[in-house]
Image 1: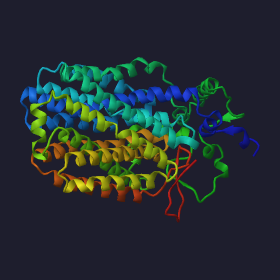
Image 2: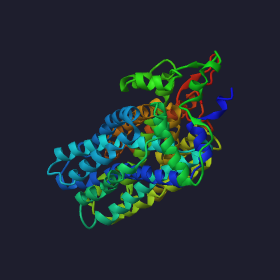
Image 3: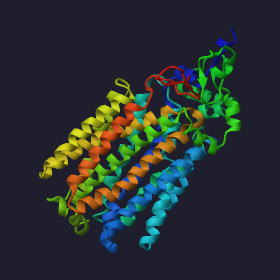
Image 4: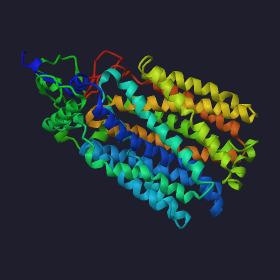
Length: 492
């Protein structure tokens, strides 16, 4: 029993060391990856109309420029998640660092439509690694204030979207879409430059049995933060360390011996575990939630872009096509992107107070209320104001949902699980451009709003049905289920 008291886990080390300079550096690097993803995705609302006007594209061809990016994101989310869980978080950064940077820059030189669509699809594949930055930063944050700092991390997405709107405002009226594509790839190149100095996640290292390497990272963290590690020996998991004391009522989904799990599992097995009897419900419901979040967020973004310069819904796309250099479009897009700031504040207030599930439900309900008057609204000012409020809420739910998704799965399959759910979310984004753009051009905005409201309702139902809350819970390396209980708990 004395030996028990002389060991500590990564969570206990993080709590002892606290949040300091080391985490600020990790936050900056992870946030830069998030900025790169946001800029490359939000650029679609500016490039599509410009390319359509220059090359005489149809509405379907314009929509495809956005859709192929999300198709690439689906492939990338699965692929980079599996790579990250099996070869390290830093390997997952290669998606944004190399694929996105290279394809993003090359797309600015596209000689024709086919080459542009192909390169933007490759950009999407690279961007599929964006969720790895979220998982990586999450694994450095003490449990006591994890919700708050994850919202701060999400602010980098807002920074990226605002930066892209500002960049479009400056570049598009003076130069063209090629310059916008080239300049938007700069953050991805910066991620590549600093890849070599980014530390590996100590939690990931522990799941691979590399406790010495994990201890080295934690020791550097303590020194930079001006603190010390706890006395004793770092262990991968106390459940594994104290297996002889385990009570029989705890049934482990994953084997309690983390080292053996790391040695035995493959990327394909970690993917299959998502659909095991213990996890399939969570995987299914989380996928619906992320699909709804992504669909709602990008639908609102596209509606703002399509309607901001129009006096009537039916003429908005035509105006965008004929007057793509009109700077008022970029000013309006910049202003509406600022809606994400109060969205982040709202999520920061609720996430640790109300919990993940209730916070998502409350903010989604507010989005539903903001969108409902658009079914009958004919006022441009009211429509813009309501979409501002809806985008604020969409950012809030998107932020908390990504935090929630990354907390639900154990370390050994966190990126795979988050990537799988994220991939489903990207399918929502892939479908969205066809719905939003085609419906606006067809003068059926009312129908589009009704569909969007339906997606929100389904999303709220799905999050309420997910069987457990992660607020205040330590991140787990294993998942436990307590028999004869409806509440599935995350094992320590």
